[in-house]
Image (cartoon, rainbow, N blue to C red; front, side, top):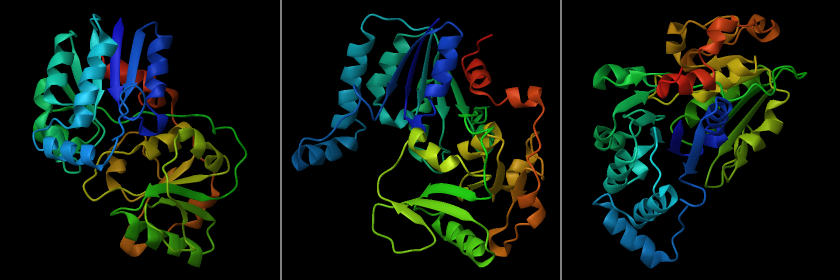
Length: 313
């Protein structure tokens, strides 16, 4: 089967389902918006300004570049399946073209419509719409599939007690700051990495000014025992951090209470916090991780994810 994937890099996570598809014997092409040949850099301020004016009609210079590049890349190919994420990064003509060269045009929404409402203007192009966000699935009749396990690399490594989180400085920052302060007061070893474009003076966070991919994060994860996941206000679905914890058999601290509705929830492995009334039990931090049943674990692998989305055996 010939399959085309067009996606954000998402910290390199999409390489995992790509590899699974190739292991299954499928012919896979993948294009990333932020990598060659789709990557686009403005030559000067004038070009950026013109693109801004065109953006009003949904056809910026950047989107036009992607349209031309995708047509050149695909040539005369016909695909059995085309999977797109972040559909707002393509113009309408590109969606019409992609739909014309495949039997099944599919989108997976890694962002909720509350966070990224512009996505709603593009979903009508697709034969099937999948989302990790339960509220969007209920409201718009999308098909619900949670995110997948992106890595198992640190499962068997020796680790020391340390909480870990890496996030952008956004609406979650006040909650992260409260948690970091709690850990500091209670002598709980923790490492909080914060991506911020602007300078930020703080001893609670390690501040970085450029985003790092999954390979660079590896060095931080080697000695981590507890992952920290702080959801955005508009988010109810489970982030990749949840599935990173599952794959690497690490404990998880999260403020997403909806995680209790999933069959893998185990209070020994997952502690749900109330930011306004923080408490992390010593017993949670000191007891070992409890393995998940193999059949249940398999439901959240990248292989199962692509099988479900692409209707593969």
